[in-house]
Amino acid sequence: MKQYFFAGITILTAINSFSQDRDWATVNYSFSKLKYNDTAAHAKQVDVKFRLPVYQGDKNTIAGAIGYKNVTLNNFPESYSKNLHGVILQAVWLHRFSSKKSITLFTQAGLFSDMKDINAKDFRYSAGFRYRYTHSGKLSTGWGLAYSRQFFGNQVIPFIDVDYKPNEKWSITGQFPVKPKVLYHFNNQLSAGIEINGEAASYRLSATEKNNQFVQINQWTGLAKLEYQFTKAWQFNIGIGRNFKQTYKLYDDASTTAWTVITIPLGDKPDPVQKMDSKGLNVQLGISFNPFTSR
Image 1 (cartoon, rainbow, N blue to C red):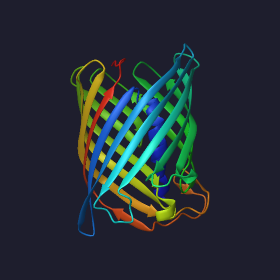
Image 2: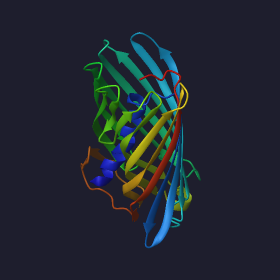
Image 3: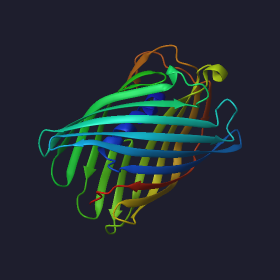
Image 4: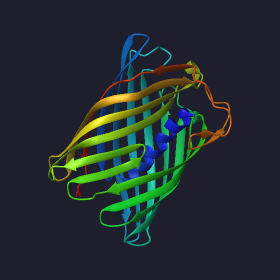
């Protein structure tokens, strides 16, 4: 059951890019350490995203994003490919009913593969909606539902996000429970706090060499965060913490199209061919650009 929960994080992460993340461009790097059978290994990930504004009106906004991910697995078993790639296209339509109420429709399609021999099975997609309500100048919340076509089957996920600023010094934001963040703002430039970060990704391997197997990566990380607004438009952030849950699973190609609601599979779930489960250090660095930054 945990497999489906972690896979759902992939969808919530995509939703979060349209609900909480307003940056026009972001570059993030992360480093994770782990151990298996007394062997030390590490994984590195680079994540780049560009938002593409298309139309801005009084009632409607249309936008999109393009992203690229690279995961490098060092000192892993040979059954795992060393380099994994993701190319992602996202689109969103936001309609404002009033100054307090809005609805967002979103969709995402992506190629997630080792890029050795690309075929139709390397693509995943998702879609859904979110209703957002501004309760006051300090609090807004959003509720929604997402569908995803994963490598293992179909998944339906409800979600909630929060943007709460009780005063000028504190803020609580993020997708719950996937990526909540609490920050204390020393001034308009420097902020510090904590973040819980749940991430999931899956990548299809070569059809000829690996018989369409796929790798699923799941992480739960606790981080101490520091964010620095070094110009009006540019922000640097660093996070240091620990992966208290980190798994790398290898699966055979799914032969069924099972359905899952949140964490509840409607049928049998597959067992991994190979599994690595470890805790370890996690370090994250990032830089973002937003010409309309305000607090």
